[in-house]
Image (cartoon, rainbow, N blue to C red; front, top):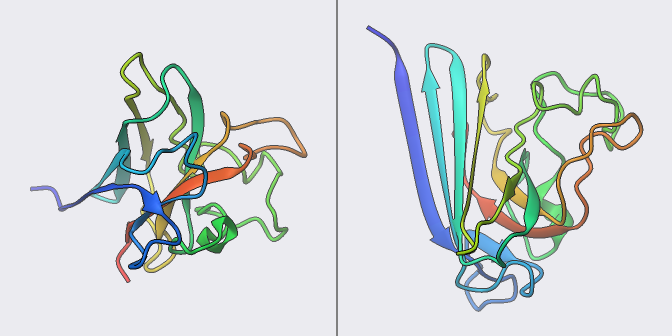
Length: 167
């Protein structure tokens, strides 16, 4: 019998300056409109992790970068912290492809369809450290892979606070 844990969270994006700070925050309403939806499912089975992202209500036929970050969302885009890394790069920000890559980080890049919907999934043979994977951030463009720019995906457009590894 396998050991399994599932977390599912859905929300709609709201402006960061909303009266009550939402879990899903948009910093750029043209690229991630208020009311757009996000869903994240994290499954851990026998020490392996799968993260699935689903979005809706975004601009059509557009590519976004998306990654798991270390901190919860805040009023400012940078408050989500850096990318979660299974093996931490001692240099920040991390742009070394030995650390900033889709095997060591959770990359969930997607391109929306004609309805403004998108999906991505990332699978790993490791699990998140407790309290260190606390949000999913949507970025301006697809994630780069070349040395000196690995892991970069442009501006942080939106953030969804979700406790992927517990508190």
